[in-house]
Image (tube, rainbow, N blue to C red; front, side, top):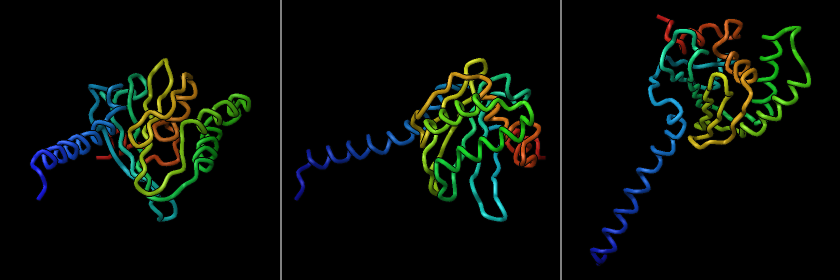
Length: 178
């Protein structure tokens, strides 16, 4: 027979443990206390699901004027290197001739610090802070902060800029797909 104190202690530990996961997952939300889910969508490549996306913001008007969070939940395994390279390719594509390669090298270093190898279920959330830069969270925990506004704007434009490769996802994230 299990002593009542041991049973109560075990229940208390289980309760504390179960409550810590939601708090941890919400760490990035302290940057955006007024944010609400603005829109959501998913991205597939040749029919293969890559990730689902949620945009948390105060308003959809001029999204880059206020802080927001872009939450990506991956549905397959992708290396950190591939995430960085794909992000750089998209930024280069959108910036065209205006690309500064020394800046791109600095940004690649920042992304290497911010990202991890992902597998199905892993979540990376980027928080855009106007005039400051960005913070990146992996599965709810702060991984890296980038104090570079041009980087933050260029990075989040991959999804939210007018030249995005996926205009339907952009509209869904901005809540304009109706």
